[in-house]
Structures are given as C-alpha cells and as structure tokens.
Amino acid sequence: MNEILSVDDLVVEYNRNGSKVRAVAGVDLRLEKGEILGLVGESGCGKSTLGKAIVGILGAAEGEIIFDGLPVKKLTRGKRPEHFRNLQMVFQDPYGSLNPRRKIGAQVIDGLVIGGMHRSKALARAQELLGMVGLPADALGRFPHQFSGGQRQRIAIARALAASANVLIADEPISALDTSSQAQVSNLLVNLVHELSVGMVFISHDLSIVRRISDRVAVMYLGKIVETGTVEQIWESPAHPYTKALIAAIPHADGRSTMPTDLPGDVPNPMSPPNGCRFHPRCPLAMPDCAVIEPEFVTLADNRQVACHLQKAGQEPVSLELIPRVPAP
Image (cartoon, rainbow, N blue to C red; front, side, top):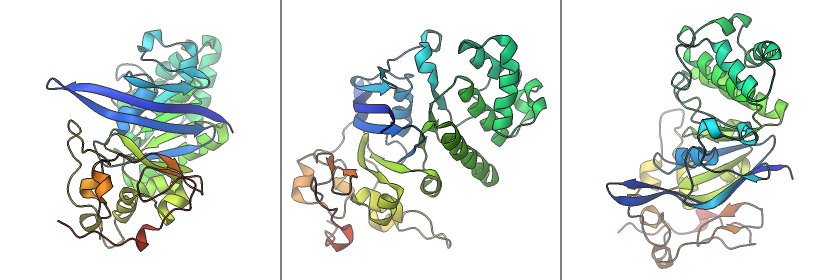
C-alpha cells in the first residue's frame, strides 16, 4: 500500500445560534498515492467542511488526520510547516482564490520560492507548470481577469502543484465552469494524478463526473460516511440505501430522475440529527432497529465498507433489490 492520507474518527463542530453542530460526525477515510477518491453526497452533508479540515483550514474537535506520516493541525497559512505545504486545496471559485492585483507568474512563483526553490530557478519551473496545465507561456505576465473560468482553474491547479503538492483536496473544482471546460479540467486532473502520482480527494455533487474519473468513492450523509467502495461496486451493486438512491437520482438522457420515489423528504437538520441511523427517516428499507441503534461501519467480503443494519461484516453484500420495500407511513 502507498497510503498517504488517513482520517480517523474525525469530528468537526461549529456554533450556530448558540448551539453546537457536528458538521462532520466521526469520519474515517484513506487515500493512496496516484488515487482519486470521489466524495459525494447531498448539499449540506459536510463534504466541504471535511475537505477544509483535512488541509487544516478548520480544526477538528475530535479524531486525527495523518498526512504522509505526520498529524495535521489547524494552522494559519503563515505558520504552515513546510511538510504540509504538500497538502493543497483547489477551491470551487478559481477567481476568488487568486489575487486579482498580481500577475499569474508572481503567484505561481511565490509557491515555488516558499517551498524552498531559488527565485532564479522558479521562473522556469512556473513556465513548466503552466504548460503542464495547458496554458501558454505568456500567461505568466497576465492578470487573473484576462483568463476564462476554465483557465483560471488551471492556474489554481498549477499554483497548488507549485507547492510540490502530493495530495490535492479538490472542492467542487469544476462546478462553476461550462460543460466544455468541465471536461477539460477533469481530464487534466486525472492526467496529473496519474503522471505525478498525486493523491486527490475529488468533492463533487456531479455523480457522472465522479464515476468517470474516480478510482474509489465515499458516500457522505449528514456528517457521516455511509459507504466506500470502488466505482464499480458503488454503481453496479450499492450496499447502502442512500447510495442506491443517489445513483438512481442521476438524470437520464430524457431528463428523468427517480429521486422523488426512492428518496423522499429533505436532509434532516444537522443541529438535531435523528437517533440511530441518520438516514432512517428517509429510508424505504428502514427496520425498527434503524431508529434506535446506530449501525457500525463494517467491512464486507468484497472489501467495501458500509454502515447499514442490512449488511454484516465479512459477508457478501446483500442485494437491496431483493429486500421488500417498507410501505410509507
């Protein structure tokens, strides 16, 4: 194994109107070099919060994050140790993450110099990085507003690589782009991961893109991971009812989606999550135990992990298609 990032029982909390909310409520994740881990779930499930905690922007109330053998702590950018500069985040808004008053070359070169490269060599390396992400040589002397959205996201990726990143946390990196740019940037990320042996957590609500570029997928619901597995396992035989509902919700060519049938209702308020399994109020296969007992995160015979009372540790995954639906109350 070439594990480079591990998240163990991570809890991230914040205060809302005087109440404490667990946006991330005990998460375990693993990432290897050269691997893309897709992180999916409905809006508000805690995906972005988890990403920010992994890179140290947000602090963890409990649990631990280990990057390349060392624990990550909440750090300001100015106090970030050199070791953790190799753990970088690519944000959804590429323009907001770039300084509009500074030329692109200066912003990429800064990352190289901070990482220990002599300024005399940094210019050539900056040109190489911009070329690597498909930008022309004259990009160095231009300002962010002179580029398209897709080009700005390429610049953000080049700047992350300038810090010698070997793990990228990409938070909805293509959602603000047009369809053509989405395809180009997602292909770019895949190529960089494989060519440079970079690990990447790809956070997205677009399941079609996640399926196309990811090696493994983690499904998140209301602050918890409910299933992890390979792309083939997740799409061909989901083991958690929420995973099944998400896959069914992908729009068909004619615009149809089965989400209203398979997944009724809205995500519960994270300030007062349901007891037992957090998904049980919306689950068509819920049993009495689901309302009172929180399911353990177990490893099945095919090595995927799932938190569902229908699945048992060490056994073959039970097909959800063979379980009778519970009538709606």
